[in-house]
Length: 397
Ligand SMILES: Cc1cc2nc3c(=O)[nH]c(=O)nc-3n(C[C@H](O)[C@H](O)[C@H](O)COP(=O)(O)OP(=O)(O)OC[C@H]3O[C@@H](n4cnc5c(N)ncnc54)[C@H](O)[C@@H]3O)c2cc1C
Image (cartoon, rainbow, N blue to C red; front, side):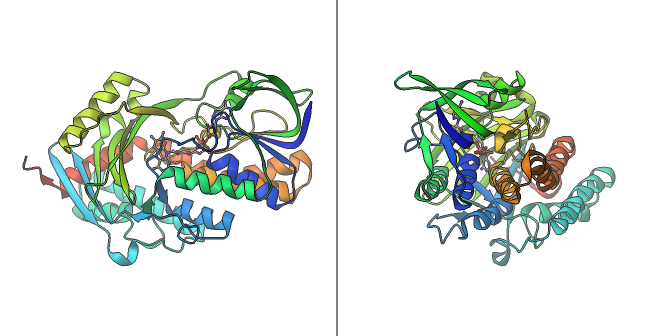
């Protein structure tokens, strides 16, 4: 039987970042990954919002650019809804990341944004709508700024940093069962089919939306939605969004450096594959995008089902914990923020109670954000649609 202090399942953004931080702190850690680590390519639009940008620098001590990760700022966004279309360009000085050290500033602005939307819905005021659009699109310092990159570059960078730090990785390997009392995970090598046991002191599930660790420990799957995504050639520099407020979702075209990506997520449609594919095809057609290959899908948590600790000595990170913004579908920032929070909790020591308490405390503002996003989704989507109608123009074609 193998032994490790901290066993991390899933070598995505969350698991590999945690592994890196733990190795930096001199901990004994082992990372398991079900796929071929070199080839794995997470289905993702690659939008890095300001919180992810900042968390990346906090973890790796470098900006994305310094890490050699080429990003494309999202300068102009075209939002379409029914027959209306609105184009919005961010002023140059606000395309870069704004200083966002204080959570309170973000919270205040987020409340301001929500308040503006509510106000708009109640009173139909043009000023309120304009303010909401400005805030949503990142005019206001410290609110939102986005850039995008090919996700594989991002994940490869993080995993390589873990390996360079001396981290141990077993890929093409997963967990079959977990014995909570003995603190033993029964694992299987998916190539040789060989099974073996790993004894751990702490088990971390960083294995995404379909987390096996979460399922084995709670007996339940978390609540998820099917998202589609496909890389396409870069044809437009503008980001294009087709809102579907009634289905709580949207289709996107996002330029991200050398290529672009199209995809969609509709929370109200859950996993209704054929309906989702129909909307996706309509939007692609409208944009003149011809997709020849089979479109891949992946699940995203809907933000209703967050769980940080499924059992004693066990923690969940990123999407395994259900951390995802319902309105945007974004979760890279939560993957990084949760791994940093847990690594800091381990560094603080103090036994299991200490790690648990510190992890919960650090995650509290992020849990609040996920909950708020989930419970305000109705307002966000409805207001988003109204804002496009109100400030946009009728499409000509
Ligand atoms: C189509 C799509 C587009 C998205 N676009 C964006 C975006 O633009 N911006 C954004 O912020 N977020 C986006 N997201 C969400 C974002 O990708 C996730 O929130 C983020 O990847 C979560 O990181 P993670 O490390 O928790 O999980 P993951 O990145 O999913 O990593 C989990 C890892 O665990 C491995 N694994 C899974 N099961 C097992 C198992 N049983 N055993 C061992 N290993 C396992 C996986 O192979 C993977 O390597 C998108 C998601 C989808 C589906």
